[in-house]
Image (cartoon, rainbow, N blue to C red):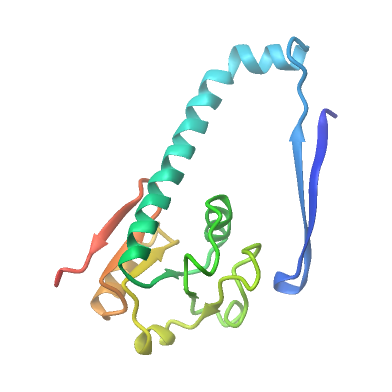
Length: 171
């Protein structure tokens, strides 16, 4: 079907799984290539550049936050796993991720480099506030206000749709 197996990894997180990566093998001048190239390639290229640009912006802000203090994640939805892995994040970038789902606590963010990024209860932040929290659930902006109001952090890094900081009113 035009796909080539690139890699297979065993993943122990959440009881174990296989991570399988394929790539589309398209020969230039083939009918598939001509169809993709003529109709969709400009929009695919634009989207690719946008995604790469946002990744760079997010990584730059994260590195700046990390150089100024401790950084942790706030909530552990699936999109956190996708972005953390796309950006190559690990426990050296995020000390931990807080999530109030008891099913996630005591586990690690999937696919992050061992030992992985641990997931803990938000109560942990009461005793261990950080300088920056990455708000993975950016569609729930009220969580940023909650984190800043409770004194869990001085600023919140929102990775999407455009990476930016939300600062504590006290700063």
